[in-house]
Image (cartoon, rainbow, N blue to C red; front, top):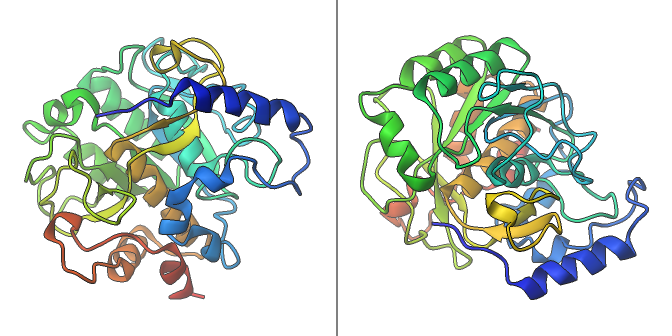
Length: 319
């Protein structure tokens, strides 16, 4: 399930970008920050005084990224394209660019939005094509490549269009995730958008599964649930970066920003929190256990899993 931003919002985004053309000034607040309700729901700004994820690389194994986006340029490290078999993972869909901005867009640069981990870098690994689909082999290769090329956190937002259900049939990704874990990488994955009670990974697979919550802190209607030790994060009407050229997600505008919904949007927020903890020197087991133990679920809503992630509580546990 995904929603697009009304045209009026996109036009407003263009005006905001025009009014803040000097985007290299890192002291200027992001003009769209007030529309990022999820940052506050996760207490991320309160966590940044302790950690911003410096010297941490988040690999976004997805559709690639807009490599010249003003809110991503300078945030990117070298990636790879397993669809076209080259080293230019340009996003021809839009999904990967949106996920990347959530995780680590430029923050306080006077342009657009703020990222969840302002000090982290993004490694774009393209394994999904322009239509958002991809082969099992390429996704496995992408996970392993990222693990071998300096990723500290891997985000798998593969929950769109039934792709997750297809991939998990027979446990295809479990071995690749274990490989990443063996390399010291924390793997964060979207739960999927079928609204089902499903155990998406084999029990014992070292992965942090993330469901989606809404603006009221309730489970999103589309979010899968039921995974052991899963957590939740905002995934409804999430504002982030989109390609500045025409793709599947930008057919009606190329303003560079828009809102989407899905567990795909919830997962990179948790990947960002993992990056904050990585800067503090925590290993994958410690990162996952800290995020889980500090998640909040005061009403014991089962569809939220262990609860909604609390970035401030997580980083202060190891301050």
